Image 1 (tube, helix red, strand yellow):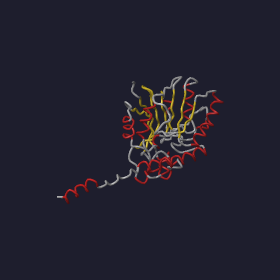
Image 2 (cartoon, one colour):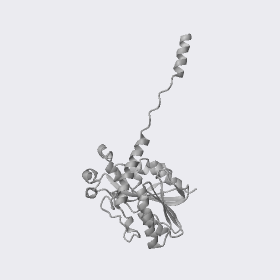
Image 3 (cartoon, helix red, strand yellow):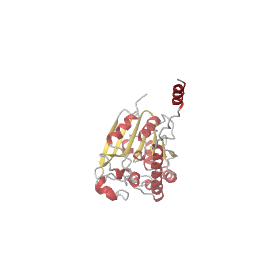
Image 4 (cartoon, one colour):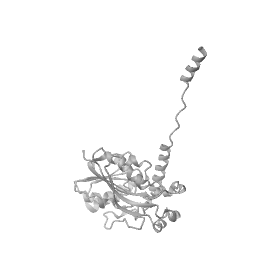
Length: 283
């Protein structure tokens, strides 16, 4: 009997095996570092390849008459500002603001009573955007744009303080897209809108392509399948997600991109650049 009691006591006090460590945070840090390195190079040479300034079907996304043409770096996969219906006095948030291209377009629309906040994680991009802001002020007289360092998964912005959130070919680079959409939902005022241009997949990528660092920096390898992308928006609390524009990635466009040229045939039809609008419910 005593032996049996000792056995039961030993069994109940035996230390549990430690839970297996999650590898996701480490993988996320690795992805973030790769993206940051790639875009630091883009900032330094002021030209890049996430979208390469055009849609997958060759649709141009450079904006004629831009107040700061040097902010055009070939990083776009859409024109989200064109769909925002911004009003004078609006507060706008630009996620992954890069050199400031979309932020400056929005700043012109909201005028001196409005404000635009750009958020980017790459110091070289922030330096470039702030230099471009000086040129923007000289050419327009407006001083309504600021650029903050931060991650789009943890925005350095107050809750319920933004009328419209925009992003251009950036969210697909995040390893936690649901968290990004949750953060956008948090900072929007009740009834506020999100308008984002992004890359989505029409069919799964081959395993080799998913591990390609260049394709990740080019906004392809990190992209979600279209249904999952739209579901992630709804999961974050938005009432609905409506696709406003949709362009399929064609082989010639992929072949013209220095990052994706080696995989041009395999990418044909795999991805699309879309622009999506979603609204936060009224309080």
